[in-house]
Length: 141
Image 1: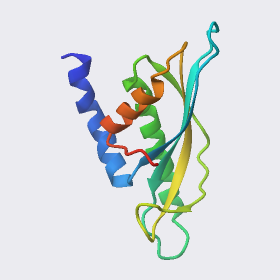
Image 2: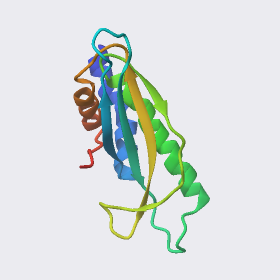
Image 3: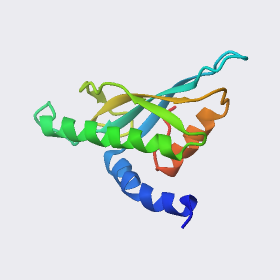
């Protein structure tokens, strides 16, 4: 079985979790190295996920732990599917809640992520968008 045929099967649990979590991605920027240098190309983004509805005004601590775990799993799944390979740096999960854009009455949390590819890769953002789409994660605009 080729890597191309394997990837959808390996991605199925991530796609299911992303759908259940209402995950979305917000691309913040692309940084290309200067011509003639061997610096990395960098893409920064935020992964967003919905929290379960919480009637008491504050989410359960377990819900925040689960959201952090799920968003970290999604971040870990981004790099392996992008060509050329990228190094993924996951930021600190801060349990700040924001009113959800796509689900009124619910809150969402975010996880900052930076992906770095060796050398000059101008299409890295487009490749990352394709990877997000393959995982069923819509881009926020």
